[in-house]
Length: 255
Image 1 (cartoon, rainbow, N blue to C red):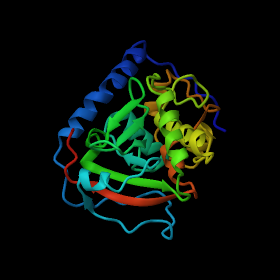
Image 2: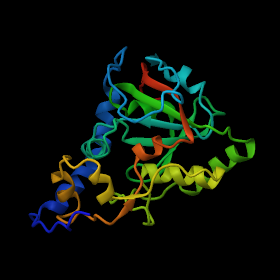
Image 3: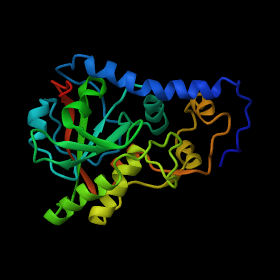
Image 4: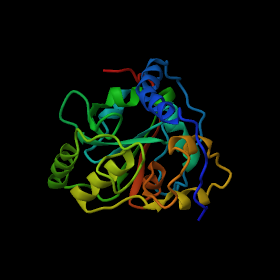
């Protein structure tokens, strides 16, 4: 495990971190106004078993994508705001934000998510609109949910609505962050636990060349190497998930 970092940080570190956090939503708004490309040239960096992966569809509309979703599906996007990009760099995955489908009865599916400043339900269109270039992937539990489990997903997500976002990504705090939220909702509703609990030290041991400058500032000079967390990438590595979509939403505009 790396030694604890004791780095002097300028007194403006606190304001810098506040500025980064407050710019998350601004960055999301910019991303939502970008026109989505008709094709995607990105490569999925997750170690997905091709036997479990659905054939990739290059493009879908939000409406047609929404029609295929089920309660309990995990919707994955790439947010371009700086903290999210650093999560991607740390985990080696383009996926840096996840939510769970909680309702499909309305005009469009509702996504339960932990985001800044509080956890909430978001329409599929608004959720995907925050993804850079309309990138989106959908993962589904290999075991179909029963109607009772679907109802439990809604209840579990509702119980976590309005919880403050945890900028420290601490698995044991009273706050929430996206991958913890999805993991706990599905665990409570179905008994299926996805994702790996790992310390920051273990996470970075797999990517020793990853830059730490951002996180030194984020954690005021002392990265909590022993802190336990769960990442979007670790959720997607679960053998209890299969891909049902991996492409772009061509009309990812807010609705």
